[in-house]
Image 1 (cartoon, one colour):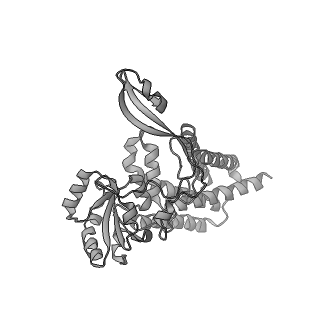
Image 2: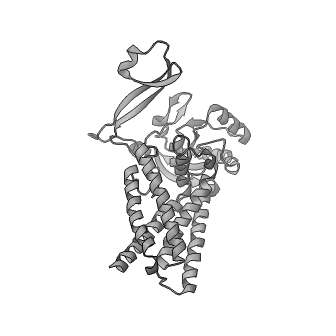
Image 3: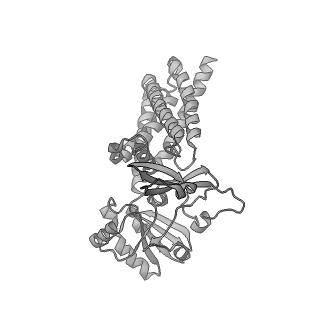
Length: 366
């Protein structure tokens, strides 16, 4: 019975680690954004790690997938099981922290392929911890299933293939796009709110500085604010979450006006998505103007999309001789649309027909 439970745990944990690792390896940039959330102030307060988020993301997902392979084939059992245990203890703490304090609403455990709530993520990690503890206590029962030579070849191959996959998707696009803005998506339809769908209940909270201290007040309290209270901010506190369309927080703002209703009916629209102009790749920015001129000659409306401010926009246009306008959109939304900075998106009447990493601009079909 002990051996059966151990072997079941071995297969269950191994396959789950491989699947989870490969899904995140399909989009390591997306996982790095999630790590940045965890590292930010107000969550783990480790902002010095943010510049290393992508490197850490690539290492973690490759290590996760390879650990699954190592467990299944029985390679270096002690190292493998100890690594699995340390990883799951860390991630169980992380998901509990996120769930209990409501800091990060999606752990990113399975990328965009499967969204889990914080408590679902924590429950998943507790289940994994249970099976990994079984493996830890019964390491002697985890034996190699192939000869040492074949086992070594399998492990080394898994490392090489995982590293190549990571390199490929970082320089092109995810092999499989699980996001709300994948090719074939109509953005207008993605923003629709179905009739009869449950509405969110939101309470407006106003923050005022009173005697040097920030205090929260409800809408009913505004008529009786303490003397000398100074307005600081207004936030929307979600009391109960209703239906959220797959596409939300999407705007195309220029000079304070949102033009998405007009631009999303353009028969030919070319968007250059550059969520952060300050950190955009110089190589990519330098090809945009030529693409702009080629697209205009073929009847396309061409715009840039960014979350950067006017100063950064002006600098980017000057440095790269850009003559098209940049429209504002939330940075998180732009990172969801495409991972490369910059990237290229082609739309016909609001439907995404092509998405490209700037390094693949030669494959642009206009």
